[in-house]
Image (cartoon, rainbow, N blue to C red):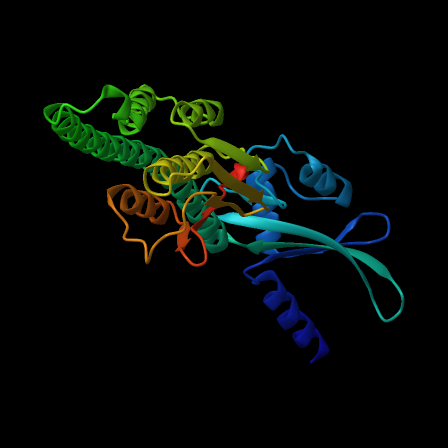
Length: 317
């Protein structure tokens, strides 16, 4: 009866779907099932006899078919993961147990996940390129809107000057401020159309239209985020001159790990009422939203624009 039970246990052990084997203190193979014999021969071309040769095989990173975490690929496409541990019996005998588990499905899913991750990374790169193209298009729209406003100002200035001349009034009374501002803005538009959009160029443009930018903080290193904050500063600068007759524009820049922000005010006249957003502010708000940021405008007790944009992490680029 006992012999029958031993034979039944040995038969069940031999027919396990996983590979299992045991080695004594001296590394001599004492028990091994059919699956482990088959796997070892398929991977090495030799029969398993001692623990040393199995350890040498498992530690050899140059073996063909070896993957991460002691996973090996067979020619039939199956994947097997080996594990070595010590076990102690009730009578304190110590054995080395080696198991080989079929991880084919897990390995397949892992490879699919890696492939999906690479596809997502490529999709992300394409989206960033597309976003850059969108930013360029929006910038061109802003330039066009600004030119249209400048041209409108010039048109009104022409009519005003014509009436002034028709009334035969002294030339000393002619106010050329609107002319100068319009020409300066138009010149700044041409600079922007050539791709100039740095802080230094914005400062120069501000000086050209008679306003000083007082800056606290610094722009983020993220180029796209910096361009949007510069666009907000540029729009506020133009409106401060045109509507508030401001001489100074105050910009407070802050950055943290995830966002960059700009709070923009000026020393011009207080808004008479709620601000109606024209083409420039509308385009700016649309651009900021598409980038994933936000724009808030407060007009009481003074004009204040707050722009917050996300920063792109370097590892995601």
